[in-house]
Length: 608
Image 1 (spheres, rainbow, N blue to C red):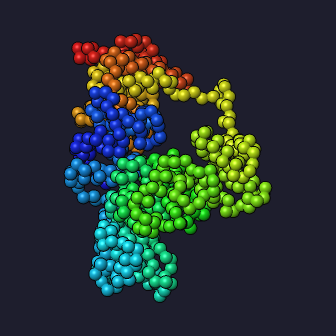
Image 2: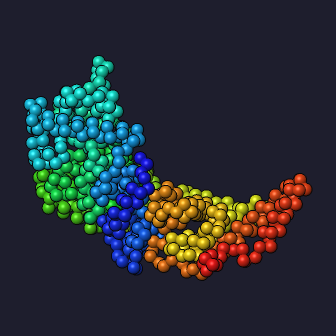
Image 3: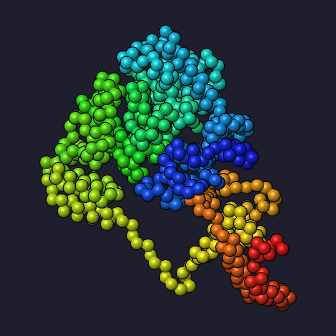
């Protein structure tokens, strides 16, 4: 939906960016109008992330991320712009106009249908004779009525959707209908215990169905892929667990929704489920902004799944610290916490999060299991370690993982552990790793030959610096910068982003419209170079002096004049009409004869 700029300005004005960011990242004062902290968008040890509280924008001088309140929420919560606007409008209690885009109306209809279906299923479970089997199953799982109500669990008898007279086309698009043996369509979840799956905002976007009959297959069934629901991009329970994950800096990942429900109900409030899939990049992106540690509590039957291992590799490549939590006796997480209680489960998590993995073979004790140990165990199941061939095979299978371990000390420790467990020489394993890394390294880029074929940057660092100084002066309300901007054509700016930003700012000034860095960031949010240019002053430093702004404008004017002279020379050389050549020569003479008096005036001269 296209929102009126005045409405966006109103929402931003009602949002304290420092307070918003501070809800995700600890910030400290770093000047009169600046807050500073560790960047939430990349890993760093020295804070380089700044929030300019006066002009309400942020900038990381480490990874170059920047923007305003809307773009911060978009990046951190993985939202589209309209969703970020809605979230901040709700936060500020500002009403938004109804969307008139067809896709927004369609999404609204689908969400309403899903909410209606969830309520119908829940009523069947709680009060219908048909729901007796499901109620008995939940009782066996020791699921309390409070938990059932909290997560709005339900039962699909098969007639709820038809009785509500919901349109079949909308039901099909929402993924609620499935094929029958006679070629028709019926409720996809019929005969199943139903778990609503919600997005981060708490909207029902899909359902998980658990079979109750012995011959009912598959045992677990999710809603098919729809405009609302993509299983690989959803983490069950994240809507309820997000704040707890952010506070702890860690997420507890389990395989299924009943595991996540049991853990959350019993006090592990930072637990989420991956819906039976291996971890995906989309799921990791959801967690990246709020957690650095992933505690993976996989069921025993998932432990040997190579797809699960690849998902964990994605997590380490994304910068997460990953630990595997092995529960005693091979219990599923929901069984364990119900039988042993919160204290025992927290002990298992604490061991994984705070201790070194043991050197010996994995057993059933509560102990931390590093990703290396987990990979070793999985790989060992497919190799005969009694033979040299089997041990070589295992080493080769682990080399890609070892090569990706970024920390040299950690990598050396794993090499030593691998050599010890396989009774191999440490230097031999190290040599194999070096060979693998050499083979995997990209070929060095060919040098560009000097001479006619070599190309130089269009603008050196000095013009780019002048561009930044002048624009910083404009936003700092320096008279010399404003005069210089209005005297220069936008194409005098050396970077494409500078041309666009300067052109837009000049147009706003000439039309008498108000603007700010925060409002311009709404327009340029999809242009990283422009965002970087606009957010240079996030560290709260004072705007450049009047003299610096005048010098920057003069430098850009001189550069532009020289470019025009080169263009005139080219056109003279290409012209064939004598009259045209004479006119071009006269233009070049006037331009070449211009002295410094033709440069943008100082503030005093502009107002004389």
